[in-house]
Length: 193
Image (cartoon, rainbow, N blue to C red; front, top):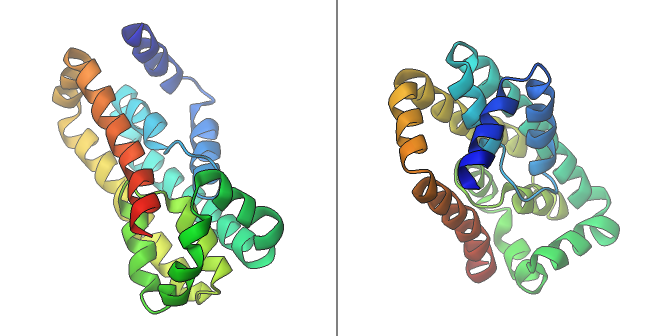
């Protein structure tokens, strides 16, 4: 079953509408969606390594725009939208403590969340909710998301075939590591904030 799903992802990654879907996933991941765009970026770059930089740029732009939407949710709609999202992800209880110290290290927090599996959407909403300086938020977001997606694209571009072979031979392990990383980010948020 996992092999069929992988084959289907690789087939979809080379579809002519895949870049539009990548943009959409990258955008919503930064404000409300729990699945990172890497699940699309990686197979798309593996399917067509010549477009690696274009896909990384697309992810970066869409993710930063989605981050701005998350910031706006936190700033303008925190009570109506932001608070329910934080409740949904289980982050509400510790949010007040977090917000009181947030602006002091805001740029570093945004940067850290932008390059790690840490749920970036929580940080975008928190940045707006705590009224972190928008230029600081924007610069940190561009730097972090660009670094993350261009590193992934670069690794896949330069060593794509061996990585693809590794993924295909050890699909179960790669899937497990991805899921541990994804849920580990949510675990960190829940217990470190």
